Image 1: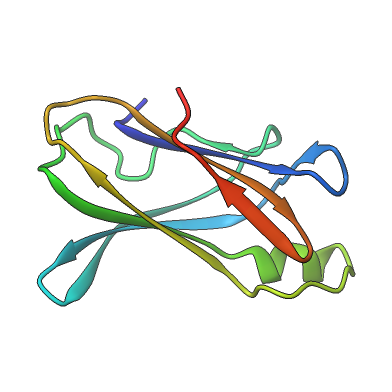
Image 2: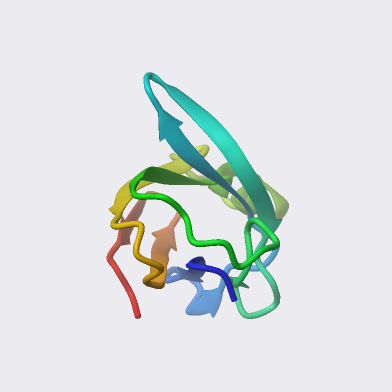
Length: 113
């Protein structure tokens, strides 16, 4: 498991959101540099975005969730095509779990464990 992980729960269905593409990026100046992508598994989880156990440097990172594609596959009308969650990490090797609670017309997040 790498330092940054995620989990999506579709609260409108009471189920994990399977098959959602998530992109991890790092802010460098005014730009975002993509570090990796992954798709949520059957439990709605991603445990590895970059494929190594290197300690990420301190800074601002972002997870971009392709939730519009997810709801389109379910044939459910939704409002948000994607959700971007930016967060800061300390660069000391801590684990950062960034869950997304999702429904077709809203979402929320928090720092998980």
